[in-house]
Image (cartoon, rainbow, N blue to C red; front, side):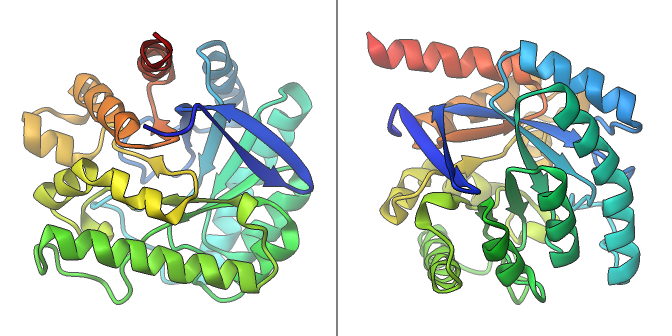
Length: 285
């Protein structure tokens, strides 16, 4: 099990969280596979409810990377789209709520603009590997979440589960070292092994193996984020459409927390927070 608390350093201040903490997902891209939030008012209303439901971190994203999404090749177009979606939302949330704000982006220009707007963390599905991202994130002083992704793209099922986990750990360690060499404090970093299919380079069986062996990432000695919420592998396992995957999402969240996840990324905050609260109560008794 993870430590009962963990902390993150962002712009010189240390923020302490109870573990496992819930990260609430706010999808701003119309290509997202579930619960697209469009318009500042809709996001503000959603975040207000998430705070009531016990969220610890809000994660805003304007690029969809689900298996059906088409990733934009035009960088300037993608940057402009993300900034247009994110900046008014961050401004509105900062003026209303005292909540830890994470922004899901891989692009240096977006990182720079959201840092100035008041974000607390960069959640990068490409682990700061795009041009300028590493330096920009380090210079910002924000906390970062490094999500593992395969480069070059991996063919699902192309190795054993043991080799898969070893590769993820080795790649994350390499990128953590790069962050520290760029001047980033280790206290500002969390890691995400990258649960998912399609662009994530894993099949359903491999995602299950990774979940079962998530505790092996403890060797990295940094907080771990896990995100299974409503994802396609739950549909493969349970035969359920995205609207019917709550029970599977909660089961995966519980297993992930028991296997060492410090943060559970979820669409359904109230229900996921109840799972985390129950687990914390169970650990205490």
